[in-house]
Image (cartoon, rainbow, N blue to C red; front, side, top):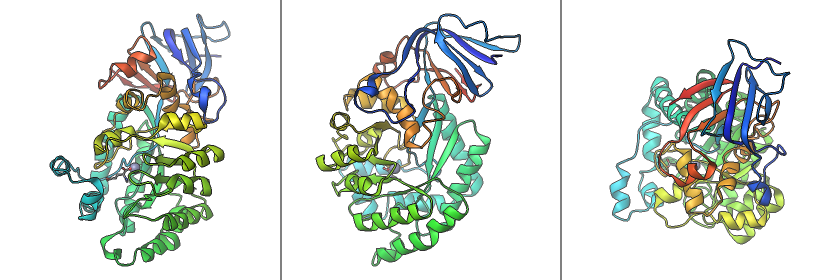
Length: 419
Ligand SMILES: N=CN[C@@H](CCC(=O)O)C(=O)O
Ligand SMILES: [Zn+2]
């Protein structure tokens, strides 16, 4: 078979070969490392992965792109399965408030935080949102991210703004090399007009918004911010059950700040992921393991909220919960697109091994988006999404933190970023 692109002499080729399922426990440390590796693609598809030379049945010609992997570490394209990609404005004005001791939920309750991004997002045109999000996608791809989840959630009471966000994401998915998977998050904050009767807003989400998003095929997932002062467990349950009834896959911002029982609810409903989980209870973690719910952890947010608390990733792995890692890129609690930095935080602070970290941002990230059969590992037949790191080994990428190690990014068989 003809190769259109090959990468050869790869010092460390991390394939993540193995089952197309979320990896748990010791599976998270089995990364399918090949030294002196070679990989061949035919257009968007991987046609060979091995050691040494290409076999004779893989042919090359003058048009084949040949990349030398000497001194490099090669991995599957990184998956960022939790972002608030499309939004207006930025919130650096919150830094001085935080430095004075004001906390995230205090800023939100005072009408700032998410509410100020809601205002900026409502005021922004489609084109303004598009070009701001496109810039972020360009940054993400430069750090090796090839698939991104993008939530709505900055329209809240204003459904047209939610739709505008989802339509921007849809257009960017068509125009930009990064694949974007959309999530409807109308339940991101209680609009001020419904402060006295939040259940009325929940009813609108359930009876009007979710059916319309589903009918217009604007999102694959539905998310809710289940948190003290935001959506209660009971309200979150209703919203996620309505999502299921309308064919949207439920996921949840769970136990980010307070231990409300979000992890338990994720297990009860059968969410694809529960995200954040900084304050998740022992019981919640056990229940997630029992039901196979993926923990999508966001250590960049813990770092930025200065809460001094990170999700108990080691405990989760011991209990058999599959871990994914994402940026949570958003203008308030985690203003960074840099997934490599998140990988370093996960190891240096949450004590994951480099092998567990790379599993979390590849095959487990893919599983967090229901895409584990298509992306997340380098196997024959899978999509050719690949990162070439200018790093001699995996540990180096994580240990040498805060800089961009990407040399090249291949998306669907095409070089889409080159240093
Ligand atoms: N916590 C809720 N949502 C985001 C923050 C959004 C914002 O502050 O604008 C999060 O995941 O942390
Ligand atoms: Zn979030």
